[in-house]
Length: 484
Image 1 (cartoon, rainbow, N blue to C red):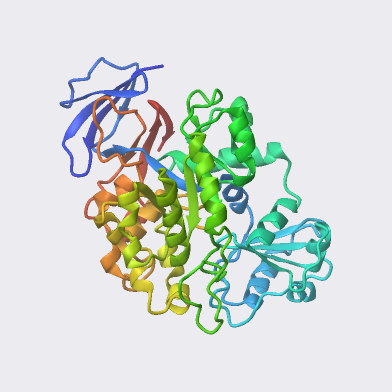
Image 2: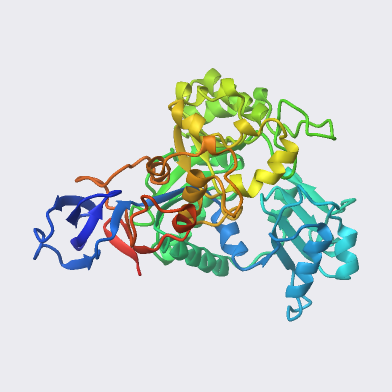
């Protein structure tokens, strides 16, 4: 592996100007400018940019994100009718034989309801599949339902029905999808990403072993284990953190994923209080009597559980289960919490894996459906001050796979011209960066050389400026994966 010298970089936020040596994939020296002259086979001039630990997306769905980058966006739709109108605008040149796929709609505030008949009237006989932004709702036309051999009264499928129907839809050939995923990781590297935890609901270990045989990935990838693969994973002897043979050390076995509830936009997040006007409290996907044995079995075989919990009751159930089993783990999303549950994350040694970009996206839906409780929604400051370990991700394609978007949302609590939403839950920039870097707060000798060089020091920038942070270079294991 070639040595690397990073000349004239500022090490850390408002850090001193230095030369940084990299040898054998690790930081070997941080020296006065000019001290490293003649050291390296390769020299990168930082021009006074800021060197930081490489950024980690702690929760993404890479195949879905790669595909969504090529689908019809519906995120601006203000109604079901509006979503169909957006779809029609983009279909003028699309072949009629192809499945029409739209993505990103949010129906939590729509004045009308999505229905298969609406798609049939607009696009008679066309197979149409529209995905909600949170991936928990799939809106299908009659022709699309027929395509997968299903009948449904409305064509609007939620939660498990949504996920099983998604798996049944026709998709691009594997080699095409693998190319899309490679492109998506290359784009992530341009934003300073050095590692991604892939929560795709698939055999990610097998998929990434295949991809790595064709080309070295642009980032590290942690391969999350889906619930249906628990027995097979145990038989393979895989444990969380194991380095896989493929990928030259960049692929590892990730945590074991379970779902306790659904999502806010779909009103299936499981809450202690009912949703206004419905009397429903959400959907409990995995009750304690099923959750606890799964946690215990995973833990006994070296797999770290990662439990999806969004509603406050779902989080209580997840915390209770971890307390009963006594194992380490992660709670994914943790969007609504009872005050008494906040300190339990630190007490139980659990990671709060959160996606700050969801907060500005969801603020209006939360104000309606979690009215009177939003002071404890997306409560990042409260979790941080309680001693919990925060890790930030995007949940792409729910939000873009761009850590600067999440960092800006965590610090600023808004992504438009409106005032910050519950600014008391904003967190300091240094903490947001650490939570986006696997806990690393600075660059030190001996660290793995997963690094990002930014053209500007993030300190003191506005949230808008943070969101558009210019990245000059990304380095993984001492190897540049992106150069501006």
